[in-house]
Image (cartoon, rainbow, N blue to C red):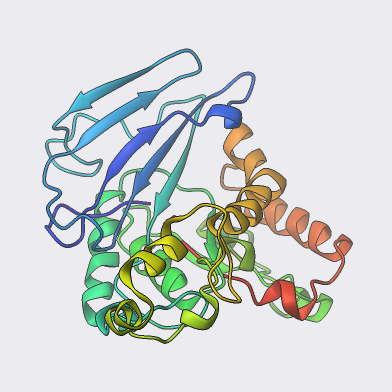
Length: 284
């Protein structure tokens, strides 16, 4: 999914080579968009168009969905992975470390998510993966409500046999007008350990800016009783390879029933995650 062109909403939008994601017979690309406030000065857009053999950079392009857009949303035989960062959360607004704490969006975050959806409203979308955190799910749902195809995003519940049975859809026509939404703790934000809930400025004053910067930006140094970036990447990339890569490689299409059945079978075949694993932290 994507984001908008306002100063506070748009951080970046790129088409990136997928590297190991490349399938044998399909072209793949990643449309990466940040909905947050990390690059408030971002104004112009650079687009990296990726294929199996090369990539090229195009400056000052319009976003997909813009009336003057020069970007073709999707060609036959291509697959696209769209990444969206969640909108502003209530703890972002309060300048608190959030990590795995399940905090919803602010009204501004809701507006960011809606604007993001407008920017990808012409790109065909077959399936949505999101973290288990409400801010990511709100962003995904609000963005999809802007899509021109008006398909309904529906959370797939495969956590148990009963949940799967109770959430069945019995109308083939309704299934055709639905998009499966898969939630996964493995896609959660980095677990910030003992920093969760602390004020960012007060934490820097207490421990020193250099120490906090090392905790947050070092790749292999974990936060106090939390995750390192390496640990976070390990679980997220593993989930992508195990669960998402096939959809990017071969494309899913609109067969909601087949997708639902396959994911249900895979889920029932997997061992139950323990409480420690399932407590780990979000994101696209």
